[in-house]
Length: 185
Image 1: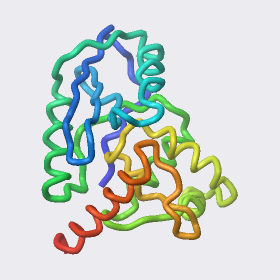
Image 2 (image 1 turned 90 degrees about the vertical axis):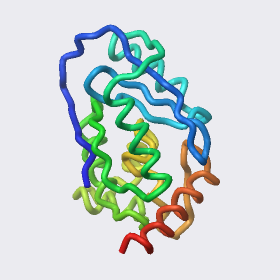
Image 3 (image 1 turned 60 degrees about the vertical axis):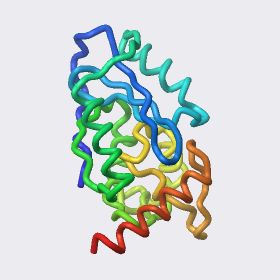
């Protein structure tokens, strides 16, 4: 169930490639190099422009329009996710964040399709029970919407909490997964 995590790799190409992907809940941007997806976000997410700039700085790269194998892969997987409830993404992603963030993101991928978990439960799962605020920050820093399912994390009281793609979109994604999970079983 884990997205393929790749970290600490050498970057050989000075270009990243980007496309816009239309989905039923709004347009997304996919940015990738030749091997890995580097960003998947909703175009109207509140931090998408900052994330793209940060990515370019960290990779010493420029972005151009174009397709790579990871972009073609994620485009197909998103289609399957929205139509049939794909829960196991295979598109490789590139992580260059702290070990703590990567640990949180791995824990997010264990949340079953169609279910939710609280920030506190994630903190307990990664053996840092008092770090639920840090878990929330890591959740907010996730650059892989849907692939690393930060939308499945809710407040301990059951409230939805924040989502950079917007609360209405988070509600839609949770409902979508809940309905499809019933049919997948």
